[in-house]
Amino acid sequence: MAIQVPTELLDGSVLGLLTRQDHYGYTLTQEVRQLIPISESTLYPVLRRLKKNGWLTTYDEPFQGRNRRYYRLTTSGRERLAEIQAEWADFNQAITKLLGGNQDE
Image (cartoon, rainbow, N blue to C red; front, side):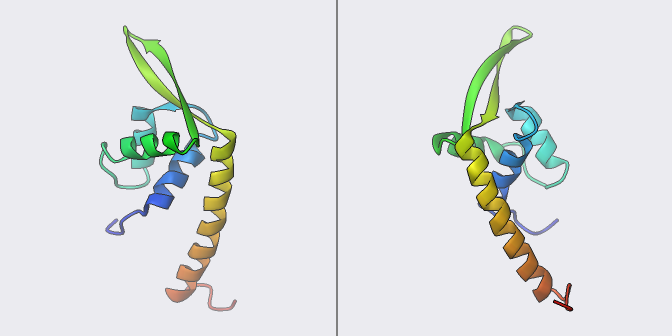
């Protein structure tokens, strides 16, 4: 995929994954990479920014002698996800029309 993923969509992707369950950074990266071609280092700045904005919290869990940092969605993170989903629906519909799809609307 040659289309670059905007920051808003990366934010929404992470927030959306965290609605299902808490994740640590590596698993989040792997899940996103299954659908969007991003480098492994791309999501860590996204996670820091989301946490700074109060949309995520973190906690550590021991795993094989080390700690894994898990990310959890906050209430304001759920609200932000709803905003991104609404913006995406409008944007997606507009681009689909421009690209020649859904011409009957």
